[in-house]
Image (cartoon, rainbow, N blue to C red; front, side, top):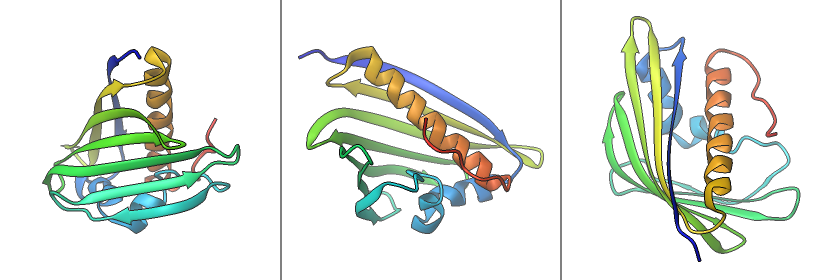
Amino acid sequence: MTLTHATFTIERVLTASPARVYAAYSSLEAKSAWFGAVADIETLDRDFDFRVGGKERFRARWPDGRVSDFQAVYHDILENQRIILVYDMFQNGEKLSVSLQTLEFRAEGDRTRLIHTEQGAYLTGGLEAAKGREHGTTWGIDNLVALIEGREPEPFA
């Protein structure tokens, strides 16, 4: 078994206040609109307890039959400024990775700079797994930006 460590950062400037961008992460309804927003997946479990020490879970079956399972614990929340969580990612019951995710919401005039930093320990798949996670995370954040800016989310590719 190989263990691969990888870090990536994704930055976007949104035409919205930090409060509005933060709100897209802080309620189940808002987060469900962009996180895992694929029309043809079947949600199997969805829990969301947004508070320090609270847990989030999103387990879903994809069209190809695989089951992904995101299980997170919130470690630090500063309203409209940052969210820090740790999550385990599983596929078909096998743990793929453990990641520390930090979200920062920085005001820039009437806009917000969203900074998503992720530090992962990938238990399988090596650097390709890390690149795949960055690709999927970028897709999700781009869907968040689209929704805030009044555009339709893009299908996962």
